[in-house]
Length: 603
Image 1 (cartoon, rainbow, N blue to C red):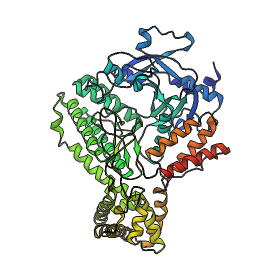
Image 2 (tube, rainbow, N blue to C red; image 1 turned 60 degrees about the horizontal axis):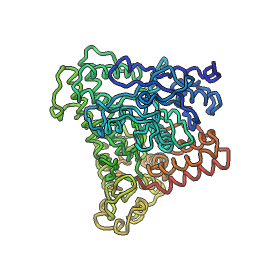
Image 3 (cartoon, helix red, strand yellow; image 1 turned 135 degrees about the vertical axis):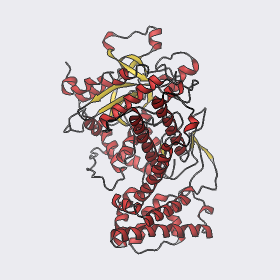
Image 4 (cartoon, rainbow, N blue to C red; image 1 turned 90 degrees about the vertical axis):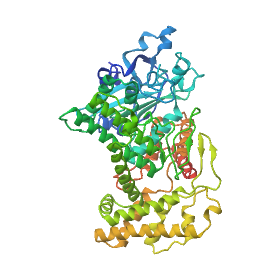
């Protein structure tokens, strides 16, 4: 028995087995696999591994030879696909693994068959699951080989060799830059309470490809359900819904149910609430996550998956669309209605499960789950707007439980929205991966600077107010002090200080005390240097270029420190970031912080 297994025996439990295989026999394509040689552990998420129970709580957050070997033995693999079998690709006996790994089936709109018969995990597999006394974790990998469920196979009607450079996505491999982008972005989102899958490990190779290992307590997407409803397959639909509910009962402590109707109704309510809360957060945090009717790019709890097109904007660039060659994406404001359509589909699914009859999707356009969605969405936007302004959770609850406080909140939201929606006179234009129409004002900047000025007894004149808010996209015309802009600035200040005053009255404190707390919190929440999608693209590219110049341990330190700097929660009890000891690594870290500063206004 090798030292890696002796010292890290829990990794051995991740071997391709998964309860989904028994629960939904028609929900996947199974593949044998072989070792993929030449890999290096680029990144390992120690906090996640400890949370999962994969390594001991007291394990040093430092890679060692045995741990690297355990990671590579478990995750540096490649499937033996249909091309290999047809062409009788030679697989050395010592490299062939004993387990089989599933590529799951789910709906994808880019496939010619719009019912999900040919689509699913195109370049990834599920490594298995990891179960402890308190929870079960799903683990999957991207970049493990070309499966029969990729768009390339569906459109060209043939199987592809893994690594075929002529078919892009259909080659079955993943890019290291994408892996770095996903790793950092997802962990920053997680630390800031944005639902997401998380990266457990990244294995890099000399050809700049990687295997990106992901983990979540439930990696099912709405798309895993939607192909069954599209096909009208009640048996398979019931299998996957019952499996999902069973996992949620284990992990999220969902209750026992007296009947199937109660079970499926609760299932629908929980999904409606999750999608409403998270879609509201996407708008408030300026997160673009391309929601669409197929439910492919999102987890069942509305957690973000597949960061290929995910972006965090510096401003409210509400006209940005991602260009996916054959189609353009939704915009950030269209995500709400796409999410509602996903809930409408789940209302159809729930009714099908309860009645045994599939009704038209249109019959659910006024379903009560959509009203629940709207209520939760609006309440969440109110809460998050107040949070971003700098109020504590107790103050938020106090304001929103008060009729006047809630009215002031709604008025302030409207005032914020006016500034967020102002667009550059430049008009719409192409960017590298789509089209956009630049926003002009940065709401976060005025939310940070206004309470600071107020605590110092300063009154911001109109010009100073706009100078604080202006982005690099603002022209002289955008910054003219017209009568209309003067009125909007006055309204912003009025509604802002009405909230401060009402909070002070309800909490029986002085306004100065409330302002002081808001000033301290807003300085963290609305940090000047905040990541955007563009900054993360350039950071990932830079880190990829340096991968052979510094040690994996130094890379861990850089990434951990960067995540630390971008955790924007005043209430977090953050431990000090790991010290970057080497001059080269510190220079790289300072360089990526400069990138954040440079691209802070962008998409």
